[in-house]
Image (cartoon, rainbow, N blue to C red):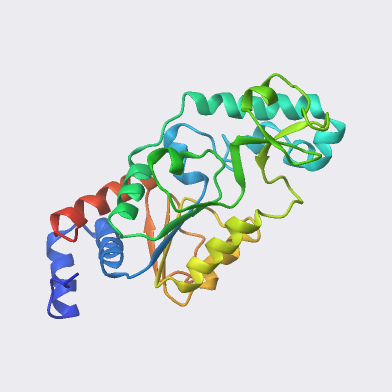
Length: 264
């Protein structure tokens, strides 16, 4: 892709006179995407809240309703299975009326157009897959993939919702999400780490980066890093560019700019 400005000074002048100050960072984001040879996007709960799914740590988040250390742990499957199944059944049923928003579809389109290489996500809602993204690393698993807690055999969601035992070993069924204290899926983690290490641009969207080890991933690249979140005040210099705003709105503006400037 050909850079449309002969000098950086011309680019900065264009930004100053053609855009509102709060939009210049989105313009820089779009330009970075357009000129990157390998871009990886890392998303968190803030990517899904605009699909009417609650996050975890805000005032309206899941962990305000229930103590995660009592329910989102392997011990709950063994010792508190009724509450465990009720909690995760509620989350699974909430997904039935949930659809990807425009931001999810934009990322899927960017992948098809070779503007981004892959998406790594902390979200377990499967919305990136539903929007059409193919190279998706679900680092914390997926709610729509049910397995036996004992033998690991995969089965249908309805079996879990109906509290049926595993047909293979009579063990207890559970969603294929990573519970506290469990290791991340090896294939997803290895793939995401490899892509990020090779990337020349990593865009982090909608995550507070509080959860280990995913919060280490942006540090694993030697490329440029961009942080997009509704609140950016807690980030102090660890990213090359901070873009404050909700995921959907930022991606829609970046998409419009890319098309206007004929970047693809």
